[in-house]
Image (cartoon, rainbow, N blue to C red):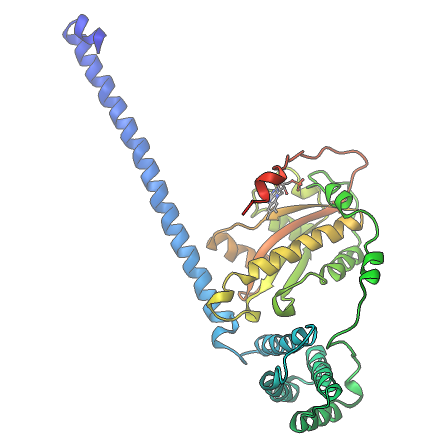
Length: 352
Ligand SMILES: Cc1cc2nc3c(=O)[nH]c(=O)nc-3n(C[C@H](O)[C@H](O)[C@H](O)COP(=O)(O)O)c2cc1C
């Protein structure tokens, strides 16, 4: 401006042109920001709506007996309530009578529809434990007892499982089972982004999943699913993923962890799939680590369009919610890992 004032009209004009140009670029930049905000907002609303529609459509909220999975979820929730009460120090008198009676009715319907599977057997075992608990207190529940007897007769020699109910454990058992140093184990895991060019035996993936199934889940519903992709299928999956560029192709397998929405019910459980799924994914990563494999969690923070494509490519039904992908491979003998420094405990452990 000073220059313009001092150097006459043409300089003033030049200044005007420059300031107008500046104003336009600011406006365009500002406009860009506004467009970005609006676009993101629309994206958030539409993606949430898609999640809402999927939850309403597939969860147990409006489909209690809708499919085998919905029915099974109902049985698991009920037997878990009884198992949980049986594990208390002092279950209250007459606890769970209605739940047990409803469970007996439901399991009968379930057996008639689907036969004797693991869930049906666990239900019968839990009901048996419930009856035995009351017998031990000198109480009998004749109606329930006769139903359970009848169903067990129906099951006959297909009743092979004994799991269900409660069991005694000791602190000494638990302590002796905690071999090795967990802290050292946790600290030796890193996200691996370089892999040895060796195939991972599918048996190792199976073993890791077997271990990870011990992960706690809400009402023990265990609604996790894991799929492993290699070769061309892996390539197609990774083509939709940005965060694995430059290293994903080195991993022999890509796992996709999902959670089955049919096992959840009502508005309060709308996010449960992510919690149970996330906890499972972490155990799976540690299980793979315990087997000497390298892993890297790969985010599945994707919008509805990528989600649709991934479902098609990976053959994943609409009632399963994506949790995370995991790149898995053998470790090279020497490799570099990101240090990924951690916060101090004082920042995380909040004083109240
Ligand atoms: C849900 C989740 C998603 C992740 N996504 C990616 C990813 O897409 N690409 C990647 O290279 N790392 C990914 N990571 C790895 C993180 O960058 C890594 O865990 C973090 O930096 C801590 O490092 P560490 O795992 O080596 O301890 C992801 C981790 C999590 C838990």
